[in-house]
Length: 88
Image 1 (tube, one colour):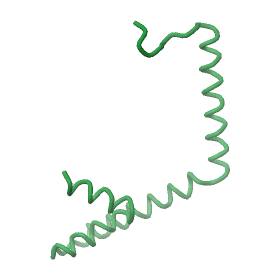
Image 2: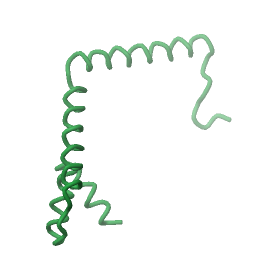
Image 3: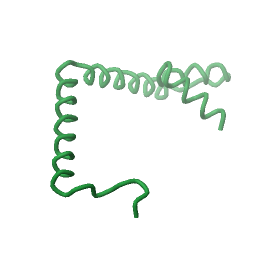
Image 4: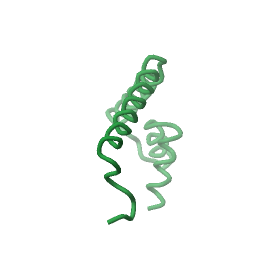
């Protein structure tokens, strides 16, 4: 279980390419497709992150959050409290 934790931390910090470094440290030569796959995954992750951090997307997320809260508040006003923790 500790190995899975270490690999998760390494991936979080450095991305999928870090698996290649781990394999090299274990004297395992990764194949071409392994290297290419790790690079492709990292590129896709960075691209998605950049797209999600634009001001337009952040604004839309904020608006949707506001609309969702407004909808739930209105539903609670109409129906009353339908769920409370511990009340059966």
